[in-house]
Length: 347
Image 1: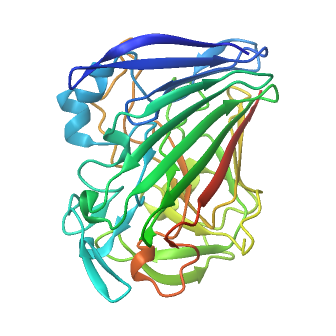
Image 2 (image 1 turned 180 degrees about the vertical axis):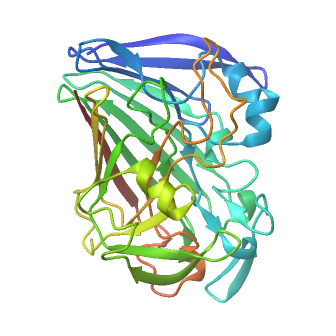
């Protein structure tokens, strides 16, 4: 597989590049080093027609439009240093309290005002039977309020089996919270409709409760037999109707050894496409874009907005630094944070 590199735009007097990975089955993935962001995923449908199924833009300027910045949906970005919300933008660690950037009301969201999704990453192309793009950055001590310097890498690989594999690694020089994820919004109908006709399955009956600010409380409930029990698969629109809302649900998996396991799948009868999600992570946010602005479009007119994309954000517990015994929330000085998520496509 060969990776193509093109100019995507300019930011802070630096050229920003776009990298395209293709496989032999008609799939391609585009990633820019601005935010280690996935901008496009081309996947054939059951008729063999190749279409984009990921929210994003064809130029860097799209990520700086007023409509996008005001709504801040984080399309395709690599999220860090800690994804989801941290209550009151603070936590205590080793007897010291750390005050973070409050960028979501009083809470810290997705790493803060300038999270990893708004950084320029260094890039290395790794070519072989399965070509990869490796992106790296250094997060400095007290960046957005977090302790320690952290060396971070994320590797994007597109396989011959139609898998988009994302491998994360991070090593801090002080104990620090780490939770990395990718924030791609998918629409298996290539944005010809909302995602409400998609069938979603999530392989757990456990969900973490959020408080009224959107931060995790640490309380885990059993949803067996409830409307948001998705173990047998349900039509997204049917659940939306029953809960009179969109999904913003943090599902919890039993995975004490951080094994790579299948956590979710989504299918569309209309396009014939399906997505299987495998991850080493203990948590996944299923989000159906209920806050996404209908004013956002790709340059070619591809329509985004409410319920027009779903996210499967695999990561550590939301608000983990403030939840006792949340698994692997803190990475110790000199230890390596490791995480893998695979998005496997079929049609």
